Length: 416
Image (cartoon, rainbow, N blue to C red):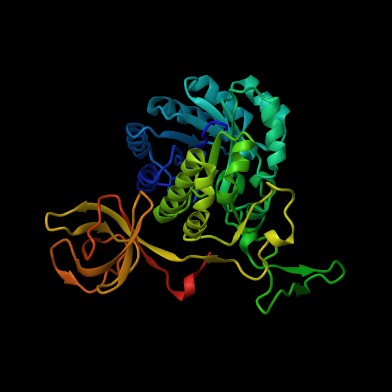
């Protein structure tokens, strides 16, 4: 059996980063407030990045910083300054796609590993070898590669060149995420980190000789979402991922909540560990992995390109709706002397409701809300205000870093 691969988890703020550490990440990728392809995510200030790197390193977890925009001339001077800051902060790697950004990173922060983003369209072993010769430590596979292609790449590249691949999360309709739709429709450039996700919008068609006559493509009375892919999920295919020689298993989602990150990190952490302990144990726990991963927000699942080109079954035509079985309430930040949980509340819940305590070790414990108290000790019937600090009395006492969640309303459906 090959070496155990790294579990690489996304984070868009300090809370999510610490959650990823606590729930099983080997490494975390984050973005700064510039040069990152998730500009709508909160992302990290220099001070937050320093704190996050310190916290991760204290727990033996690596931090990779994304700087994977396709740069223009006016980006280069600021990029040089940014990479100098990264050299001071000492993350474990910087992730780039643009050869110009690669050159600046190599010159300005040579002590940092350089990883090549999927945005660079890495689809063959000659490309992997090119980046290796330039000094890259790792190359991220294009989303369009099959497992057989990745296995062939592994055979044709040096053993010390690491291969990273996405194994879970949203799929892009465009080749390796190089999308022009957002820029065309809204002026917000996906290749500069400002994608508005027009692939999730509802479309009609126009016949060439009938300009202005919009013809709905009927799937049902709601129309069709013809660009809308299902989400990638490979939790039940870990043996094939390992056999292909992938060194880092990457989760998509730098705009997701702490609940999403905790759920996916905990599930894949256990699946990977179980498989490397015993393939039989991994198979025997398959129902748990599938049940748990379905508690993430998702659009239905697919295996993407890994087993050949996707067909019509990988698309969602009748809706752009997410499935969301659970609502995130918050993370336990502290426990008072009388056993109340301090919580920065994220969604409404009320006294008398049954909620769940999500543990880092895989346990989910039901508990009843006995009381909710404001910071001044005033009792309240519910916690309706996002980010209010409340103290919660529960029938089962939680621990610091436990996540509190509740079954989602509306039959588990929310708009994406």
